Image 1: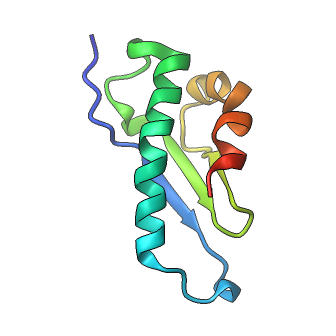
Image 2: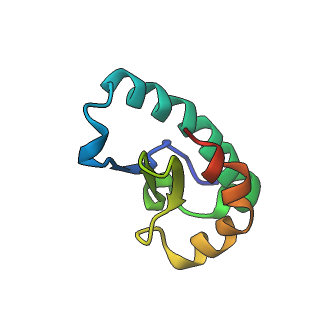
Length: 94
């Protein structure tokens, strides 16, 4: 059985016109997203998907107020996750 260390990668997209975003707000958002995304991955892929969550990359777009599966996530996993991702996580993120 794989051991998950909860190392999901986030890439933040912030528009320079937004002014300064409160760093505490971003940290709070990230800590709220991590357990939701972890549960989502485990529900869709189970424990056999990879050795840890290191292969999963997400883009948090503060301009569009959404989160997307990054192209850096292996295609085989991204295809399995994308089915319900926008409905459950993507458009309800921020």
